[in-house]
Length: 113
Image 1 (cartoon, rainbow, N blue to C red):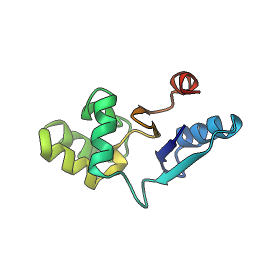
Image 2 (cartoon, rainbow, N blue to C red):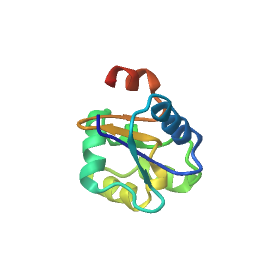
Image 3 (cartoon, rainbow, N blue to C red):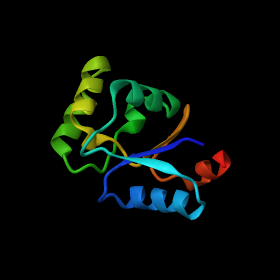
Image 4 (cartoon, rainbow, N blue to C red):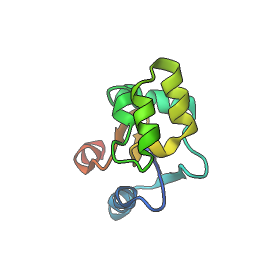
């Protein structure tokens, strides 16, 4: 297994995801989205595996103005705006090769073991 966890250090669901893999002795790589973030290719592959760009957006994010603006954008404009403002992405994003999840989903991760 090649696990990558994209998230932030302050996100409780990201901490729970790290604990899930730690408790099972599964090595993972943590990528702090405040420092590095996702590349366009990574974002696109995760969005594709999880039902599209809209499924990646966190409806509870703090920047409500940006969230409202994104709702009226489409295609590449929307993608670029999300990549510029990765705080909009629901965390944690957990990748295992071509498989991935958005949000805390231990029931899916158990199937990966």
